Image 1: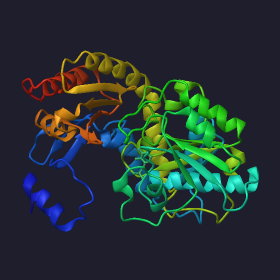
Image 2 (image 1 turned 45 degrees about the vertical axis):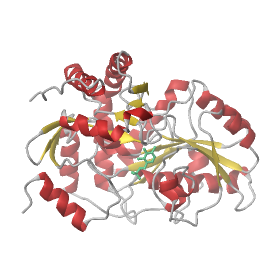
Image 3 (image 1 turned 120 degrees about the vertical axis):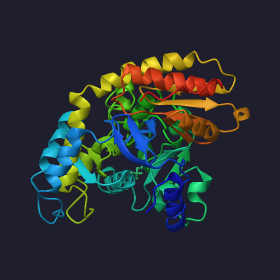
Image 4 (image 1 turned 90 degrees about the vertical axis):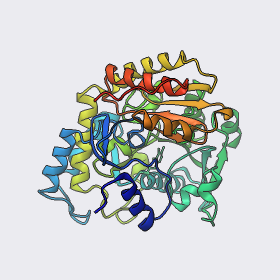
Length: 409
Ligand SMILES: *Cc1c(COP(=O)(O)O)cnc(C)c1O
């Protein structure tokens, strides 16, 4: 039996595909913002599974929903109905204002669903010529890892070796409204965008940019499809990041925190005009909309609202930015973000963010670099001021090369 970190690392590396390069920390327990490794060391999770655990690890109410539902009825397939799905739909409509939900499992599947919806809407509603539909996407995008999605990535490594790719996507620079205006043409079915690019390095576009895109979409009758899989559900200090510009997309894509980390749950949301393009048989997934996913999803949404996680994200996030803005380190190029979602971009001379993430691990903070030079700080939204202060003290200690503080026990 493996017991040490090295044993578990060896086991994974020997029998698993090598499609990740994780930090060598083997976690076996989590609660709130904290996780423990197999050797009993305690860490603060500052990645929160890419914002899937906004509600904190193993939130008791979501765990209970999972236990209760999975011991009663787990999977019916959509060939039959189940008593949980309608309640989940209803909750999503109440929270988002969109009239209809289409449930899937992973984020990438929900993005694929939105792409299919946009294309069919273009042919059957807008009147675009068959197979001519175009979708505008943005450099540094991240929408998942299917062959269609990586086909319109600007990240060379995501694509290399995986072609041929699906046509119908036009890649534009992110943050440049003129580029969107000149790309608009009658064949454009949709604009697919992240309101803040997470994997791209916590890139916050200029204020007004999303609203201008929304206007262009209206003018040219194209759908605005917002991928809020990572930015949504409280991460930025609002329920959805698009609320910062007082707009409403035509299609909203959610995943990750929609289950608080307990289960893969994703959805595409839209109003009738778009969602009605799907007829029985057009699209589906064996596990999509299963009773466990629906019950877990409903509990996960309740926790975000009932526990004030959006407000906490706004308040603690502002404090985090304030303290980091004052950091005196020649290695730091820029600190940016919104809510509890902050990217610390380092100068190239710092030698890459990975080194810092390894140093942070020793200090008891689990962070992951994104791109080469950005440290991402995205703890669960349940974090309190004391925990945040502890994290910031350590972070600043590592960034300024000071001593490493002891983990609070
Ligand atoms: C994580 C992510 C996805 C993909 O979700 P998976 O569940 O990993 O397929 C898509 N879009 C954004 C913005 C994401 O952050």
